[in-house]
Amino acid sequence: MAVRIATYNVHKCRGLDWRLSLGRIARVIDELDAAVVGLQEVFAEQAESLARHLGIKCVFGKARELAGKPYGNAVLAKHQPVASHNFDLSVAGREPRSCLRVDFSLPGIGNLHFFNAHLGTSFFERRAQAARIVSPGVLGTPDVVYPRVLVGDFNEWTRGKVSRTLAKYMCSADLGEHLAWRRTYPGTLPFLHLDHVYHDRALKLTHMRVHRSAASLVASDHLPLVSILERTDRQAETLTAPEWTTTHSD
Image (tube, rainbow, N blue to C red; front, side):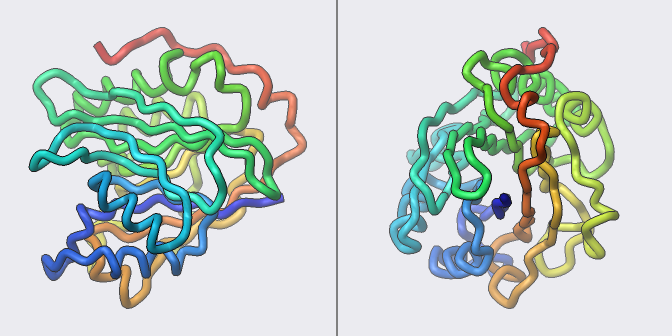
């Protein structure tokens, strides 16, 4: 039992050549052949247009208004979402940020809570956001009873506070075990690893790759990160949440 997921910062669908092209982003998403894709830096109308073009489902989570339009994160999926919730990760004085949760019942892996986040560029901002994510208000809400996956652009390229905080509650991929080329930003000559995948112990990451193709190298300033997850036999762990920290971002 396995599922392929992906995370992709689409940079408002503007490529490294500064050309705005939804068709090019759609081509990259189609190449991923993932059951669920978390998008960051996307307008609501762009996400909905991509979903229509690809014939898949879309859930949008607003972080803020940009140029008068809803802007934030989106989850595109081949299967119908069961439920969704958008969490505010904003820190006072910084650009508004959010984390979108979408629940699925997926063939081959079953029920899944899929979280998609985009964290801030400031160290102190990310520290507060990481605390918020692992609080009872986001990852630890009472209705979270199934395996969780957390993906997104965390704007952290070293094993910093965000990575250490999240690693206390979820498994982080050993990039050296899966990737020969670990960096995802910027697209044509990436030298930073900003995009990450975390998952519960009830899931096992069996494969991970940075998607490099003619389209992906120019479609955005990030490269997509693709992972394959399998269910383990540790089913009991999916039914009871661990002891969550009570630290909040404020």
